[in-house]
Amino acid sequence: MIDCDIHPQIGDPEELLAHVETGQRDWFRGQPYFGLPGYSWSHPSSWYRKDLAADGRPPGADVEAVQRELLDPSGTAAGVLNADDAVLASLMPSPYRAAALARAHNDWIRERWLERDARLRGAIVCPAQDPEEAAREVRRAGEDPRFVHVVLCGGSERPYGEPRYLPIFEAAAELGLPVAIHSGGEGMGIAAPPGGAGPVTFYIEWHTLGSACSTMAHLVSLLVHGTFERLPSLKVLLIEGGIAWLPGILWRLDTNWRALRSDTPWLDRKPSEVAREHVRFSTQPLEHTDGHDELLWEMLEAAGAPDVLCFASDYPHWDFDDPAFMLKRLPEAWRERVLHENAAALYGERLGLVPA
Amino acid sequence: MSDWHDVGSLADLERDGHVVARVEGREVGVVAVGGDLRGVRNRCPHHGGPLCLGTVERRVTGRPGGYDLADELVLRCPWHGWEFDPLTGACLDDSALRVAVYPAKAVDGRVLIDI
Image 1: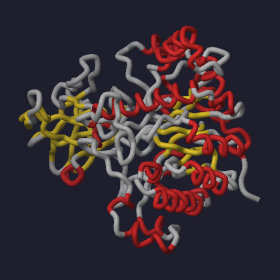
Image 2: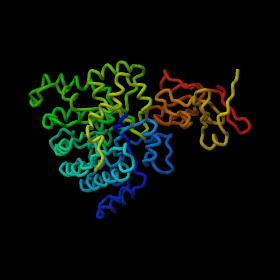
Image 3: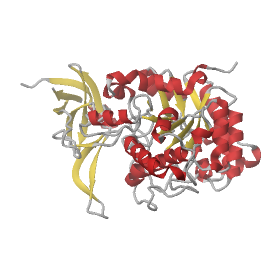
């Protein structure tokens, strides 16, 4: 089993700050939450699973906790650590603070996590609001083959197909790294509002719309800008934005492409075909269908499933998908591909490499 | 016919809010619901979470724009927060889901469940 979305928590801020350049360390120390934009829409109860022991630290703040609560019982062969907090650096007003925090986080992941369990893999955080600097960080951190993808947050100033972001995707493609876009951060800091109709009111609204709408927007943007025509080796993984909507948005996009092709004449085949080839989707949080799972599987097949789906747990968050439960819920013929093979193909050689 | 099983100490239940044990092949727990004890299968019918490790709390209710705490106590799953009636086992927001519930009692400092 390969888990594309594990969230390591920062138990001791000083562990992370030790990796920040000295000239900026006191600034970060003096800010709440490292100066990252805070959530305007907060979970009414807890961001975390409530059954996890924490002893005053956040759940999932230690390698041992992740081993005990996730990796060992599930038999996970490899798990990718996506930054919970630092990925929001892209939404800080200051690209300079964002760059310092991203660098520190990547170094912290390497030292505190990757060195301590050979099953863990890293996700490169970068300051997307400064794409040239972000590309430099992708190349720097990506020298370590244990980093297996670049992670951007769903919240952004503009959709990621915009040419301004190309340096990030170019750097990733050059290194053979997929770019993961993980929902979250919509409406925070310098990000556009979530939902597409102005700021939302409730967490339930943000969690329903923010993640799905930003994921749809990035998917369509990357496709219509011709990102994959520019970078034929690029792969993108969309994490935690839902998947039940996928066939609908691709049918809609294909229909519009036939009628409006001259708007984006560089698209010489159906966008859904490009998506099948270049885009993968995490399963979590797999929609609860009120007894209509068969319908969900059939619709997803129309969008390329099971080959486009990769398992993700989202440990230790409250909307976590349990590996054992997912093993039973997925159609038997899909399991091996969704739980392991698709991610293995997506990450390729980096998944098996360790530094010399 | 009653079939009472010892699932733990009352002191542990009072400290943690629950005790959990395996009885006849099933993982079950007992939670404190107000002043009473209630036995509950320790597997959430939504996603398989350890339901007895959740919280017993008053259900939040309200009309549009208003919030109130009902007297009704619910058992909230520690994973996804789905709420269950600890007396009937019914999921309060999905009529298709129900968790098995059992009588429970304390005798001489021990917690017993009737499976």
